[in-house]
Length: 121
Image (cartoon, rainbow, N blue to C red):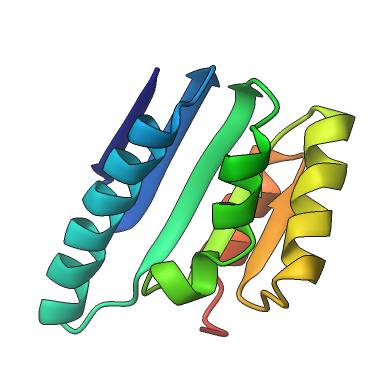
């Protein structure tokens, strides 16, 4: 299960729970692209908060897509939130493998949102 929406602060929020299929991932990417395009058309930054704290560990196929996220999506900043140590290690590995520089992983939701809102976009 997942949901994607634009919050009142113009942050694209993504919430994932349980198993995420490749079809779910494609739909999530499509929704994020649409919202990013909307923000860009309004001359606003595209920033994304992705809560993966209740998501199962992703399959190898999903991990491969995750390591190319900067090439797939147009965004200024992306913060992942998880309290699961395995997930955090996996995301950090994907960041390093994909040489992703506009993405960070946090174990504190407030810190993630503060980083996203910081003016250093």
